[in-house]
Image (cartoon, rainbow, N blue to C red):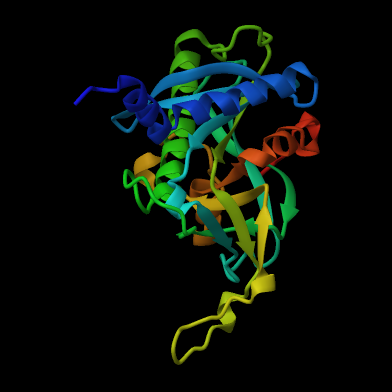
Amino acid sequence: MQENPEKGLAHQLNVHGYGFQYAVLKSAINYSDRKISPWIFEVAEFPITINGSSTHIDFILRNQNEPFFLIAECKRADPALSNWCFVKTPFVSRRESGDERIVREVLLSSKAGGSPKVNLDWITRSSEIYRLAFEVQSGEKGEGKFGRGQINDAITQVLRGTNGLIDFFVSRLQKTNRMPFKGLSEDSTYAAFLPVIFTTAKLWTSDTDLSEADISSGNIEIAQDKLVQREWLFYHYSQTPDIAHTLSGFSDIYELSDALYFDYTRTIPIVNASGISAFLSNNLWKHPHDWQRSK
């Protein structure tokens, strides 16, 4: 049988998502060049190490208005499981009973020296934040490569990348007493980080109240009008210690509610290919002084 390396190569590139990754990056660069987006291309395939595990960040964008970095993970979904559905949880913690904060992680350094610290900035509270994610069958034929777990894999990978990049900044800062970015002014004292996932999956959200489930059976019904397709959304994930950096900074944590947010909860925008422009051009990213430092 005659070999067909072209088809074989295309299959490998498609299954591993390299074409999608660079198509997303090309779009981001195009929107920046056209002044639609404040996000400038910085690097692709940047290597990091976190807790002894090494990997590469798909690409990093930098905000033109401040040292604020988007750490991007691109996920081409298996066609058979290309419906990603997100659900809110009615209870998060005793102290957070209403809308949740959209947060980014911030590395702080003192001009006078000393150890760098981390904190969280927050920009707004939103009722449109989701905490449960599921891959649902689409009816299309699958590729049989990855199967279920793609959402969790993408989240784990992008958080490893974010925490590894923070560790990289800390390492260079401790060696040079400067943030490792060409063009930052001498008196810059912070760098901000936000993980983001770009995907080919269709994104669906439900506002169904899980606490209304039938308590005897544990089942809940989802009405057709309770599932809405989105171009992009905010997801909150409580990262586990094995993928987090160990940098200290949250000294005012006295309760589990505080620890859940400061140590573990991270905001991750998840963006469908159709929503790249809307996400990158959103007003949330255009005004650095709108962010507030958590206390």
